[in-house]
Length: 401
Ligand code: PGA
Ligand code: ZN
Image (cartoon, rainbow, N blue to C red; front, top):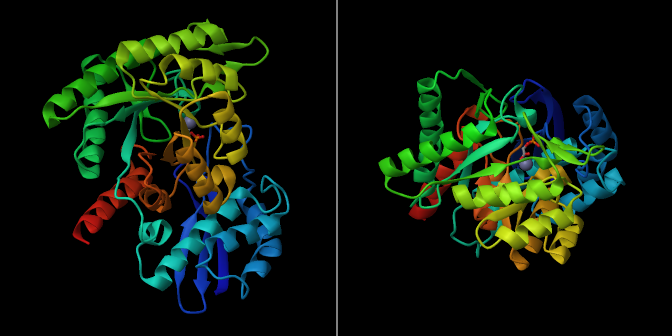
């Protein structure tokens, strides 16, 4: 039984304030979690409020309905109560940032009470034994860095890695290799919000660098490393002119679909996220028809972890993969529902961080608990390695059980 919920503001990786929740139970269980925050947020995401407003509103509406009334072991009840307390369908009353922090903290308190690791508590006795392949952001721009690539993320995908640990190390090695290649070409580069290199280069050059870096590291480690993209098409799309705006060119929707399909061919891309605008189900469907047998076509801003939007996508054949961000929808139960609907329909779930993150490691546990085939949580940097290192620990822990 929840005995106390404490809410506070803490810092995220961009230096912005975010909501952290502690959940304490009558039996002495304790859980703590913090909300992440996006920069290239989808139009249909649950609403993130100013953290001080989110906390004030959650204290008024949600905390009294939870304290002394709800058991942390019943995650569905915790999350239903958060929804009922909020009363809107997008968490615009208490804020998805308050909701997700409380939801995740409650799950950790429940795990603490049972003494099970969080992945085991969330996944249950019949949890699968698959570990997620980490997608590592190594070059990026878009909304995550000024004057860098137009495409938001170039991600290493270590498809042949024999273990999570090998995969995590490989992604970091690709990140390092890209640095060396940039230095060879005398290209200066700082880092974007997720720790990816953010050089002022055309996307064409980033493709060359990724191909060279993944090949070089693959040779070194002895397994296959591919790469992929988060185009973040909604950020690039100019609705008035109906075109995708790159650094030195623009593309109509048809040209964009052609362009992405050509890139999938040329670079054997393993992954393409948000290639098109967040309203363009039919464009997603057309691209999926073309290349869906060869690559993952993943909806992030398109689906926003929302089962209704995913159902629309399934109906239309839009994409074959969904990005799952608990804070996009507001609770762990909703995120798990999205994973389940995806899996039932042959869509690959990719559990994901946000560009603004904290040391919180819940998504690493969620990925293992749900048997998700992929996790996207960066390649380097403390708030990213918090999750990656947790995955390495979980892998070791599981193989010892
Ligand atoms: P965001 O970016 O967290 O800034 O939305 C991540 C993504 O688009 O996948
Ligand atoms: Zn995205």
